[in-house]
Length: 529
Image (cartoon, rainbow, N blue to C red):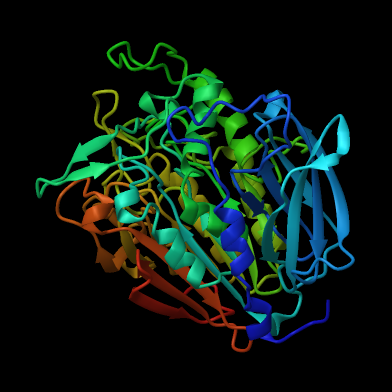
């Protein structure tokens, strides 16, 4: 695999990927049940995924329709001449027939073609039809550059896969940009959001969803959480995208339940739930999350099961994936003057400080599953609580803002350059510049926060700003009405393009069809921008 210039490194032959992604799936209704036929060969009808790809490694994911041994073959070309073979796990009921195989010792900055074979555990010679995919390892040469996309929020507010609109069309637009990877900023599923067959639209027309049994109610059992992840894989656009673009996945609240926090008890008035312990639901959701996504820190054998991690993407970029859900304190008015736990927890905050200090990458993208200066209220328990960081008081930091102030102060005084915050969650797209001269708390350097999403969910009006860290919203696109369906537009993703020559980082906020709405170019080597 010889090195090649940037255009060659980004070239992808999509024909075989489209065929692979279009493998026949079970019928939508009742599709969750695996096939236990005693005859036939294992099938991988849910496609393939790759995740947490670095300069020399990556994870490959697959799901079988019955017990099978996972085998992965890699090659420098689609012809698979002289392939390298990787023996993966035995797929069975314990993981809902899913599995991941770690590939190590890969060449950096190269296109890797792979195919997954599922073998009969009792007769390895009997294999199903191979499913193919491709990905690029991160470069070690700065001049190669890096380009990736980000967004979040899929199948929310009852807006699921609508075949009449082409399903999750946004993945087709993202795939055409041929990014090095996709960062999903959370709410990969809506476990608390049932999908009905139809929904009325404001113009009198009808939205029509593909439905499954597991999506007919809120998820409580492990099987129901698994079914939520399988639901999205019914979409051909997503399967095709997964076969072409590796992902970095984080989670937020809807992987479990709206606005959850550790130790929460679901109110008896929420009759949708018979299981009232949120911690019990979290355990089941996290297990299904780790089964259905290739996440290096959650796969079997990982030293510590956690979502937060850092992914090194070569000399230009490190991605710091946060978990602003698992370690937070309870949602409250968030006006306390002392708050050591905050939204990250003490251990994760120290980890983030340490990793930022150690990073030698030109750019340090902080992937947050919630925004910093946008006010996100929580009324799920009948009180005026706060769900994110900002609580609407533009004065000195209070509550969870205290922890963010500590982090921003640390970045300034350690002179950590090139930090950029990316997030989703609020179902509109915007760009905020944070500036000490506008802020109540001033001991930090200026920085940018960019918001995107949803991928396929209800869109909502722009959130209010909190002046504590001096944000100025320089761009926003959002509806004026709440819960606008994907048929009404307002579905978004973002692009980050780091130039290998100049080191400049360009952010583009894009609409569902790929149209560029806003562009910002940032210069390398600065503590603040």
